[in-house]
Image (cartoon, rainbow, N blue to C red; front, top):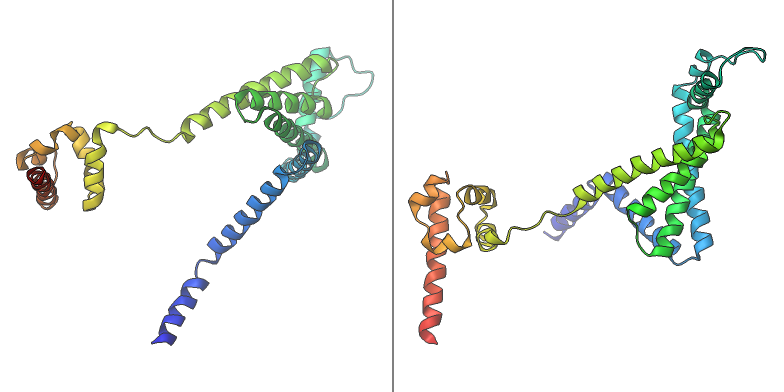
Length: 259
């Protein structure tokens, strides 16, 4: 018997190896973040910038391999070619965005590294991560990306500011959207007792029926079979709900008579 139990325990431990790897990776990640939070600001910023730049370089190199043949579509014009400044700037932007693996690795490394570094410093100084910090980090990464990639053309300073503002607006909007969807839904207090009752009975799926019929907590003592039928609750769950309500009323009456 004990051997059978041990076999079941061993089988349960050996299953789901992917979940075990994910749990181990999450544990290491949390330990690294905890250690990093105890370091000084320069050390933390340097490590965060370096690791993020390495990740960005890997992504950029991969993207560069996908667009390895793109630079041939944008040949460099001869020195004596008479192109207006706008056309030359557009050509340089296209060449910067269609570079090979090394060029894209450099561009993405600068962009992600600067973004993560600024975010780290602002989070440590301000004690929080909000949309202002996110937009400031995006502005810095966008400006540096414009300068390093050479997509700014002859007027690099102006284009760096423009790119920074564009990056800031995009990342600020994404941050706000993420905050909106990450917030937990507000619990409806008008159905708190109803929700608790349905959870105890294992009938959580019928909460939407109560809400559809506006059967709030105040209506629980008044519920009848016909009222539950009107909101399309099947006979079995109706019996359980009514029995639970009646038992609750009886227990309250007994407590009241004792007092």
